[in-house]
Image (cartoon, rainbow, N blue to C red; front, side, top):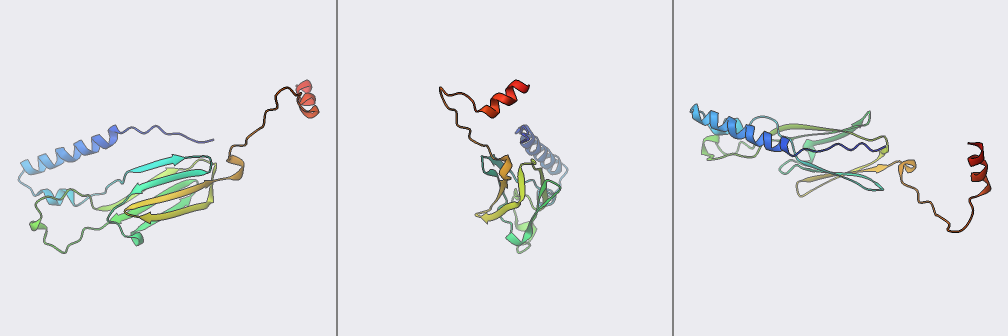
Length: 163
């Protein structure tokens, strides 16, 4: 059975509002904005798709090296970890504005029991990590042909009369 979780985009707006309020309060207190925005974890956005063959997840993780990404499955939980490192090539006081988030992130997803943990692939291209999770054979839908104008088989008649 597939579990469907309703996604509420208001949480993203709430995080954006919180960030704006933090910057406003920090600037009002006379602090530097860069120290606030360069620290702390970020949450990469994800799209989840499902079809007859399996699930696909696409995470936006631009600026992260492939070696800094870790994908694991344990007890029907898919976990993606990573880190976007702040490059210290330039002095921080030269920055006029820093809006991108840096730091570590962890995203965990509870997988339905229909997912086969042995059929997982991951690809990273153009800042998008795409995970493909195949379904177990018994979880895939089966097509049953309906014969028009014919009677059910004798086995079905026996099971219907027994009930």
